Image 1 (cartoon, rainbow, N blue to C red):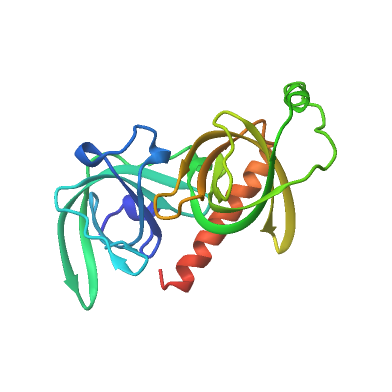
Image 2: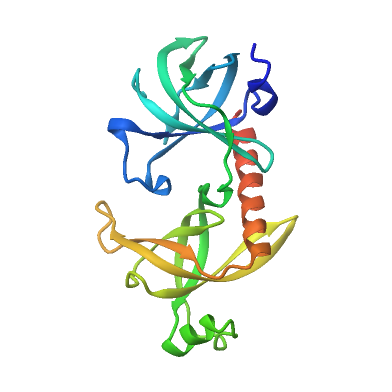
Length: 242
């Protein structure tokens, strides 16, 4: 059993894997496909057992020799390293990945970019030119104007992704209004975001996926969103037996 590794990561904890090397997607790690799983056991200082990811009821067979960025999630902290799949097998009905850590474990400072999958109602609208000037001057936006409905499908401390039956222009600034449960109470968030990318869904023509990055977000709001994400991730894993 590892002496140092086990001080920082715990069996049953959440793990996220993002492919690198030949399987790597765009360089921005926020854009790469993330496979979520859980840590089964720390075997040695540089070897762990991880549950094979399951997505939408389907087992994801990660390949032997596949290399990944691995993230371990604790209480308000994320540790990251690179790792390689060295074996996979089934034991007592559990599909297992054996992974060797190929770099040192480090504290991952960019917690705000951990994305949490969800389905949250959101209203939004595009900012006018005068409002963009007001935003740059850190002044109040115009009073409430008509908003359009959409659904947030993942959220992070750095931004969000939502789907809607309309499309904003890339690089436009939009007001995002949604609610989160913070410390047992519902809180409304009204944050401005920049639209980074818009894509029509192949399987759902007329539905558009938007990726948004927050602009001038209050650090307190960001920290609350991050706390919400970690709290909800823990609840999800408890419900699924993780």
